[in-house]
Image 1 (cartoon, rainbow, N blue to C red):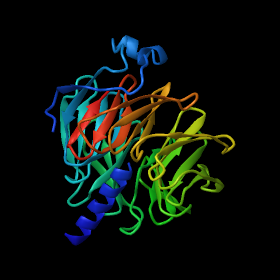
Image 2: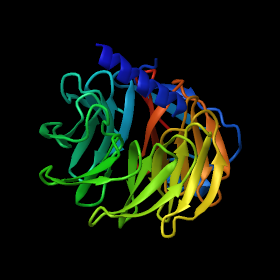
Image 3: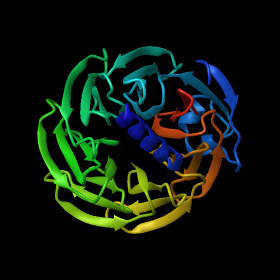
Image 4: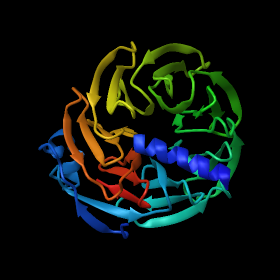
Length: 329
């Protein structure tokens, strides 16, 4: 019980620096005007014309953390329940709630094209779930309790798992075989793939660029204080810096910092929608223009702490950590 309390307290701290019924709606308020449809034509196809549009919230498990999209459905890792929730992306219908394991504390979740991979803090494991059925296909040990797995990435063949104890683990997606544990900077928490390399966010204010083929570190690049989330926009990496209240944009080919942009209230998760970058925080969600980092809007959500974020091709899905909901923008 004491260990669970400590881990939960740690995650709450991260969320701060990072009850709605199904189908209930709330208008989101933007601090800056804009037309989301103009920059993302998918919204026109969805008749989603205005930036300050309607946000719908759906109930999931307790303390939702990671979010992933599988091409048709949205999956949410529920930290306190030891479960993941599967929702139909078009209308938010809950298609299933699946137990990952007793006392597992699911955190990150990643899709590999056929299956979901869920990292569990308290057991230092990663669980593989069949996307079509939610069936557990395997559970694999990574890291330790003192260095638990964080937010993962898929490189087209393998799952890369940052372990808080200064390593990143490469798991073969087909069978979960451990292909290597590679040393990176201190306290790695999240990772993203750029098509050739894996970028690992480390707690000491750096991001390491790791060659996917052999795990060699190609470079270490300074970002802000307490970096947490990372996303790739097709050319650049975006890294959230909790303590600084900023997001850093790094050119993936060179590691050059192209800009550091202010985001209020402890930015945590980050995702790219094809045109803009969305950042979760302790008080809502910010939308930044990918080309220049300009803030297009800061939107309120029912949850005081937003965590994981994923794009479904037309809408953003935001985990409301302290409200047991996921919000669809």
